[in-house]
Length: 282
Length: 248
Image (cartoon, rainbow over all chains, first blue to last red; front, side):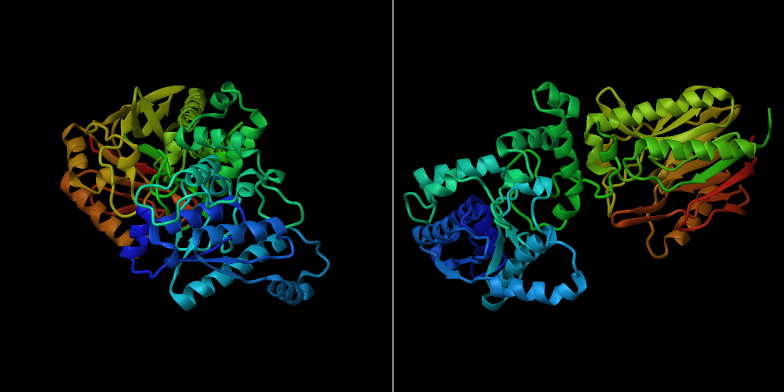
């Protein structure tokens, strides 16, 4: 709260804007923003696509209402259709893949940046440390923004923060007391909702497996053998190591955010992007 | 004892972190040096790891892999061919050095740790390394070499210390990034060191791109009379064998 409040105040922003997806990261980010800045300085936007579930729409709205922030809904289907149409002659018969998922994410980023420009509010990016560790984020899409509240917060800690905030109003918080994050957000499987029936676990190990491995690699500088000795699956550790190294280029272009762990990405962990050691790790 | 030392300058483009590939590249340069009758092959600063490795050196597994590669190359020098100067992050106890290792006769003949650790501009050496003691010359096949790592020769003290303790030639291995006007600064500074100490001077630089830095090579050898004996190409890998006569 202090880190965000001072960043906004000392850099002269009137307030912040963020995309509310119905997921837990944006809900916790919104709650921190409201607690730090007051509801009148936070603007939330839902940007539904055809893959956005009814539950997400309801949860985003419920969260915005509970926090008392201005809430707009800007559907992006038309914009996505237009992108697909104008790209079709060049894409030819190539099948849909992650390109289309990223167009969706970048469409949202473009609209959020437009709102930021028009009203002067700083855009908050809502990604967490687990995602940024393994590159589960779209550069120039959901990574758009001036500041990242959860940059150094692992996903398992995001869940803990959400539960904490629903039970306890932090000292000095300007947001409302009581639950502000719908219970359903805490229990549904995390999903980027960039294609039908997608969940994060299609691509990533479960967060209760991923996060301890990341802590070993990032905070502990541990070897694969050391992590396997602690009971982790070797293939999973190797997969996470590779994803971690490959995502360095994304992290180098990510917004700043408050450090809370012993080793935060940024000036606390200075890694080469071009790194041939990755291939030597067995 | 030969008066002339035949030095091979291997101006290499390492792949940062690709330790085994870097070692193989060094061995390829050594094979060429052997064919050309060289006594000693110089490779750039941290040539085993690539420079700058940044926080990779905080990983014990990375340091272990670097050490194993240095030992592999040392064993190869047991064939009686040219010796090798390689650079690697080098742990002694709890202390991590930015080291130059002299390999000859199948073993690690000597280690010298970088004494001046730059921490300005793009450099972050003090974050990772401990400064070594002021170095003395390395005895290699009857020659006394004043072996330095990059920043060591940008300030006058290390060269002066080496000269006073009997060095016959100043030899620096470098990872010096390009910026406009840099080569003029290197050359005029190197001429200064030659004049101050009356010794020949070798500048062997890394070449290649590493993220936002480009190392431009352009290695050279200055004789004690300040004349340019050898000059390697800029912005590409290059190799030359220079016969130098250390001051006896």
